[in-house]
Image 1 (tube, one colour):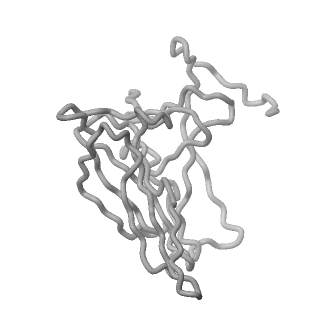
Image 2 (tube, one colour):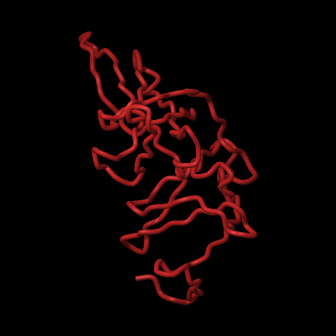
Image 3 (cartoon, helix red, strand yellow):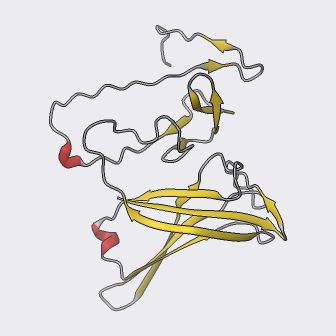
Length: 204
């Protein structure tokens, strides 16, 4: 696995602009990293294809002068056989300048034993987490826990956040057992009132 990181800032003239990571609207959407993959076929013809969203904006994106775009890629045999790959940040409205800094793509080891979840305490904000379907989310402070992830504006009850587990598969053994733990709280979207869930309710 390889980890892509880069920091960017959008400017309209000299005025910073905060993009919206939850929209595809041309005027306000955030940029993402695209790969242009090229390889020659058996007849010597150059084949080109574009793979979007190799790295995306990490939420929250309004807490500093630069925003992090982050992603993980796996080098498959097909990827390793390519002749060249170009990586670039794109799809911001043409009115905005992009200031880019600290671009990295470095190897990240698969986890072997211990906690298989990365950034489960959200100290690195939304890094390693992605949306399942189209809810919105943010990293907020809740005492006494500290940083927590808030998921809101869900259009369906099974929408939320996901994390792909980048595991060293050579460490997995048949009949191994893992314990899954975490904390959650259900709040009213209207006034923040906390609710107790029903442990015995049926799932439709």
